[in-house]
Image 1 (tube, rainbow, N blue to C red):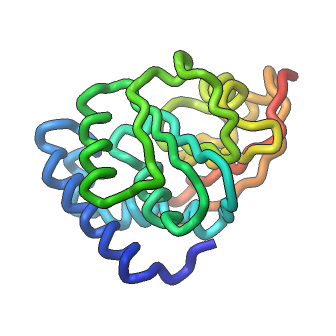
Image 2: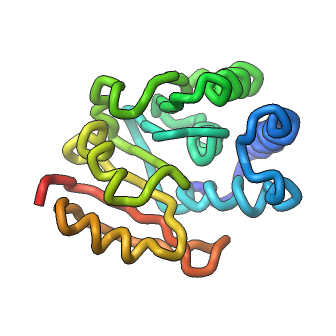
Length: 198
């Protein structure tokens, strides 16, 4: 649980924001129209997971990491925890950006795997995250593949999250907790665990 971030964490978040702005014209990491609200729209949005998750050990897998949201933000926020972050990103240019961020920010807790999610050997992750990747029914096979039996998935979802949950429940069983988003009306963070075929 993170409430008031340290100066080191704040400095790293600022440096990450600068790198996103610098690389974004070359690689579309976030929508250019959201750059003026980068901190509130993207970084603070991802930090909401930190206010609710309390990781203590194991692997945290971030699926389809793109520009590092939420994977890089979480790796920065939880840098003092004994967690190994594995960010999966199939796009080579985005993976190059993520590697540059990891190197420049000194994130020794983070590894970038430039591979498709379904091609990666199962990670048996204690924690898993994804943001703006795919509808929940399409994410469930990834959770089934990469999440440990007692693991937790933290998925950032938009206003249609309830419809996605209803559709996913037709084929999957899972425990669900929802946390209302503080940054987008109607959006939610879904905490999913105990995933199995319905």
